[in-house]
Length: 204
Length: 204
DNA sequence: GTCTATAACGTGATAGAC
DNA sequence: GTCTATCACGTTATAGAC
Image 1 (cartoon, each protein chain N blue to C red):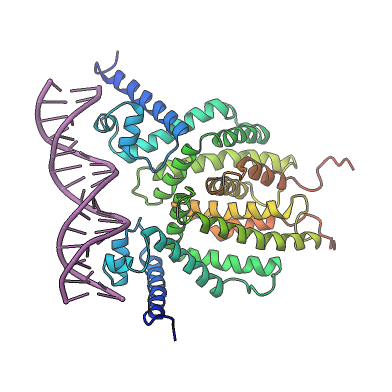
Image 2 (image 1 turned 90 degrees about the horizontal axis):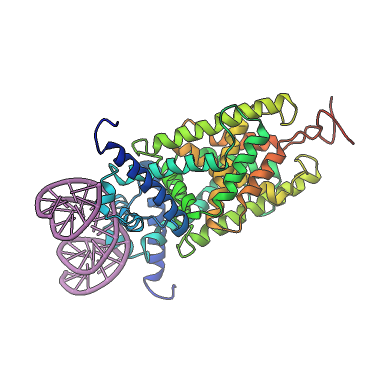
């Protein structure tokens, strides 16, 4: 079936490694983990682990990619049709709340995102694309919410999406420093801020 | 004069080193800099530099402390009396715009703040205190602005201050990844969002 | 495909001369 | 106070056996 006999198995093993790594980091945390540590945790030697990935950094980006995929299918909004703002935020708030259970993954994500500032870093493109996709999804939802009068039209939807991304990333930074910080609460409060004072259909 | 002959000179040299380091990082950038690199740039040997600081991490926190002090006196709002929101934001927006000229310092700050998630990290307390002070200043200003009707009263001033901090930190993260991002614009836009649609003294 | 062993390097920190 | 020299360690990556 596959082009070469061992190719499919190699891919499957790679996938298995990534999910195992994800699990280990989620449960045991991430303390600037080295390839060796991760290899031990996954049940391989360091060289054995690097057999499947070109470098340490490539390995870690793949872990983050796997995580996005897992989270989006587990907690995210359905992607087929472009969802409305409520559905979209509900999905992301589930992800955000889940993140509070896996500090190691958040730490890995944050650490990588600062390292990836260098354009030559293997994760650079990943973070750019991820951010753009996030903003595009929300910009569309905000635009529709604005025409419905559910979100302030004073500021362009694109700008609101960018601010939302900032709030999320920044709040996560604060949470890492002080675990009593509630990221979902901060993001939720910000979203509440966007509802115009006088809705289209007044009640009072 | 001083208690011990060499004490005063030691402190002065320390100060001089910190300002020189600040300058070097601002101009040449920060690429996960080692003590050795910084020592070279400052004109000392690695051991010579560490003579003034207990460890690498202590050195870098002191650099950040020095930076805060320099920035606040150069661009910040006067601290004697608690400033109003406009003065406070104007000062911080100057700092934010200045940051765009010194990416190395922003990188150092961000990198340290993720490393400092560990409570045993020497910079941990620094970041907690800095964040608390930032929020306290803005919470007071927001409270006053709320009673004046200049800022939405729908959300507590404390929460707004926390969101503002998130916006700043998060936008900076995005800027590091993509230098075309305008941090001051994002923060400014967020602040504009907070002005109630219908002010106390209506014009239209 | 996975291992052991090791290369090649950079790091922070310290000892000791001057 | 500042240097040179070096220690002790951890890192990623690779070579080569099996």
